[in-house]
Image 1 (cartoon, one colour):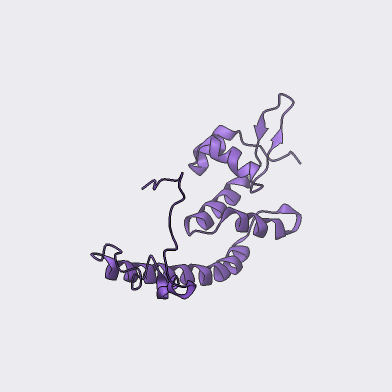
Image 2: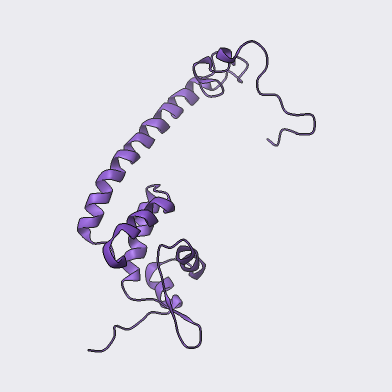
Length: 153
């Protein structure tokens, strides 16, 4: 039985819609792997396309690449994720995504109430000082720049 044809970085790049530099980055991160030819050129197995799709979808919803790599490493024999794997992981990641959405909605609501205050009321500002956290540390300024530092904003 002949070996499955391998893909060049250019072929993977074109089919997956990502830059070759991204392939190299994903490889350095341990998300995909290649073999080297006798001429030291990278070649990828065809299933790298599914792996890349898995990585890109997870990344698009905000899953850190470290977590994606951890999940890929749990697959037996380094196999490509299946539909069942995605269902299992997406269920767990959905909870995280919903938590982040709630957090962003709270930031949005706090930001809306903050507009116009100019952060002159640090006791009440929900963004600069949520729940007057700085006030619990005692009286006086808490966020001063050092003598050699400047505000980069």
